[in-house]
Length: 120
Image 1: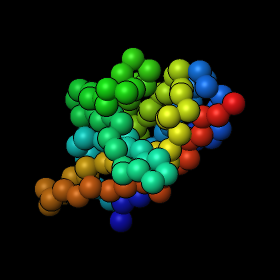
Image 2: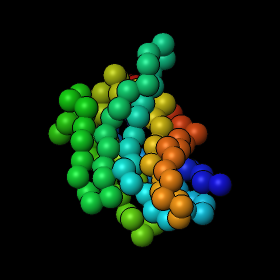
Image 3: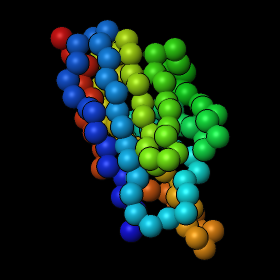
């Protein structure tokens, strides 16, 4: 069984920073892409950023220049550094990982979500 455990959310003032972490644990061979998604109240879940195993990144336009995704393959962990936060960044943030098993089958897993609130 694979688990993704997120941490780092909280309440921050506009212009502030937060760093989210997501660690994968369980029995698997490797992890392909990892990413962060978010869902604001009464809105659909949206992609925030993704990173391949090799380190190639992709961001939604609204966070470019403010957020940075990174990963530590040895620790099976993905991070999201969020700077210059805005009230519209308020959402539950979910981590996602495309896990590869020894059978070479793959499966997408989700974390439980961590709340980020940007408010004065």
